[in-house]
Length: 77
Image 1 (cartoon, rainbow, N blue to C red):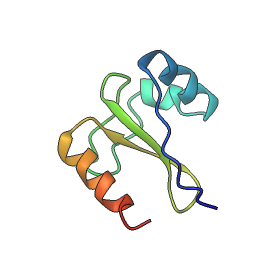
Image 2 (image 1 turned 60 degrees about the horizontal axis):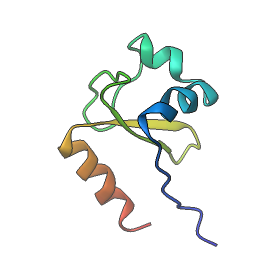
Image 3 (image 1 turned 90 degrees about the vertical axis):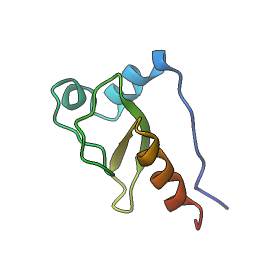
């Protein structure tokens, strides 16, 4: 069974998702960085939320380069 399912959320869901996973306050406070470029994330530039190898949540910003790098890393999975 393949557990690598990509899920999508609309903007109105992001706040709720971040609250559910316990990351909302840290995003709003500017304490979370993009895992690719280390840019501080905001509700406006957050593009991807995923579980990493340590089973923690990681985040990717809306920079096209970062999105491409994330997608490339998932090709072989």
